[in-house]
Length: 69
Image (cartoon, rainbow, N blue to C red; front, side, top):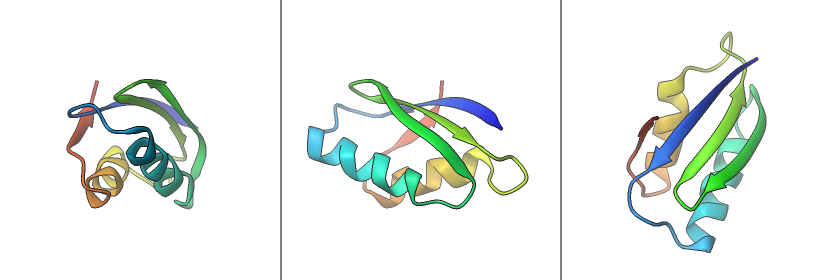
């Protein structure tokens, strides 16, 4: 499993952050997801199943811009 910190542009509301966390947790290959700040998440993922861009794309689908820290 790999780990990556992803920053989310702006300050998502608590509800928005919950949507992002739930979307990431719903991906096959994601082990652990946690908010490490108001606009940052730590994701543990299987690199055989997902790429960092897959994770970022999932966050963007929830309406937020994101990028690796």
